[in-house]
Image 1 (spheres, one colour):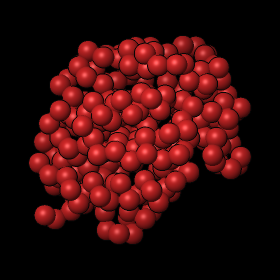
Image 2: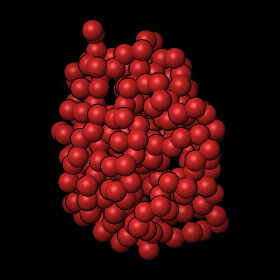
Image 3: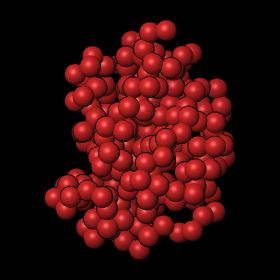
Image 4: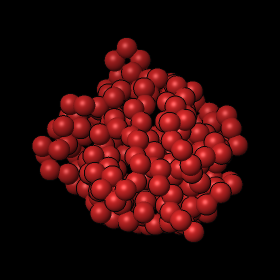
Length: 230
């Protein structure tokens, strides 16, 4: 079976498409077609629409990769007929009628919450929170860059419920558990990976393994492109 050549990368809260900056160049160098979606993080519908616009630009089958909230987005957008597989990175993977709050409040509150700041209904992460809880295994200068380039999300977004049949019910999936994550409970991540029947890799990383352990994340994505099929 030939490998999937199209890869669409979907980010979550408090970052943008540049959070994939360490895995995009190697993928391009190996001949993959890569699009890093810039989620507006204004609503689930807006984020799904941004991913669908990226899907419309590619020819042939595609692998969707979602980090954190991006997992929520690819669960909805992944029903597109072009999508051959899903890769979740420390991500939320809802079923229909579930919200991120519904899923994550079943677990101990993550340390990152003490660093969340609200302004005009949008949630920002403080510089200290980015360095200590979100990206604790990155050098200080890299965490500072994430803080400077973060995309805020409306507080209401975490309460938005999934509206579609989840793509993971009929597409093969992979899950990278960030076992030292202080933003999304590792216990949730393990349970989510099991629930969706994902091929699972566990990394001792913060919430951003694609930046702190890019080689390991690349290996999972490339394995998925070789195994995904419609």
